[in-house]
Image 1 (cartoon, one colour):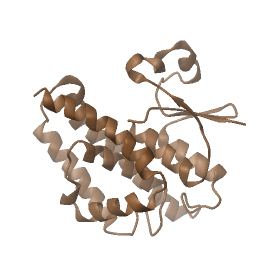
Image 2 (cartoon, rainbow, N blue to C red):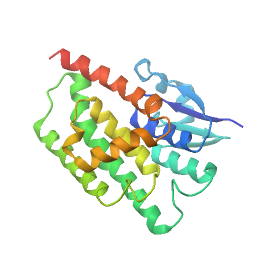
Image 3 (cartoon, rainbow, N blue to C red):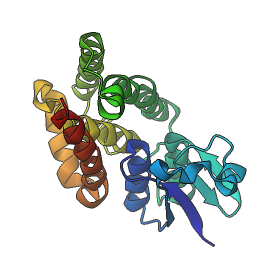
Image 4 (cartoon, rainbow, N blue to C red):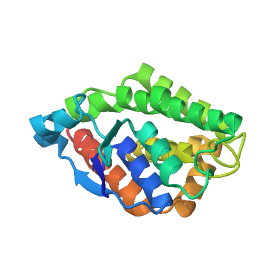
Length: 217
């Protein structure tokens, strides 16, 4: 049985799934997608995923989209215990909240701020800078409440958030302005298996695009 995973390394959500799989020792059959070449728009891929988005997972015929759903599915099915995604309702709710925060606030505001700059050459919008700063301040508050993003041990919430934070850092966002984020981020670098070869390698792609856009100014 193979588990196919369609992904692109620059994508923070894709990297979060790869970190989760690494944490539980799960081998994925990696299907690298070149979005610039439109590989996600082929009839073959659209038949699998009509939304033509990545990441996309196929586990023995079961198709699943959205990185946070994929992470929680994989660790629930293949993890050795529930540490990465607790079964306790309250603990799980905190993990879910942090995942939704990453999806609905942090990574969204990153895209609103940086994607027009990277892909269209627009100036960085001051109001969007303020909104992104606000998102980081929220994250700093959360990280001041516990050792990790959603409690006293590593969870899938950390994989999602660290992928987003490293992507922001790749675009010269000053992580050190947020002391709890900076402390947690330093710990992630040494505690998360595959951090450098998976997460930072992907963030480096974003940095190259960011620097290219910056040099055109």
